[in-house]
Image (cartoon, rainbow, N blue to C red; front, top):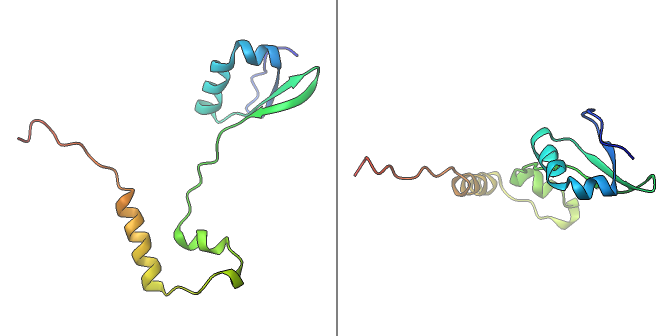
Length: 100
């Protein structure tokens, strides 16, 4: 296998190329969200791809479970849980040393 092409889709690289250039492959995956298939003797053996960072609301998370396995929650409770999660995940701004 040769060096990877410039295609934004998954591209094939040899295992030896991946070993020599692993850091740059990981950087490309992170920065360009591009996937890379690692091949040994022309056959795919591994894939390096971006992690799906999908976020779920509580309502979407509950919907993943079968209907018979979940108990109905009232809307007020779900809203309170979502507000609590949003509060917990809020961006914290550091205190400015100039405000003291």
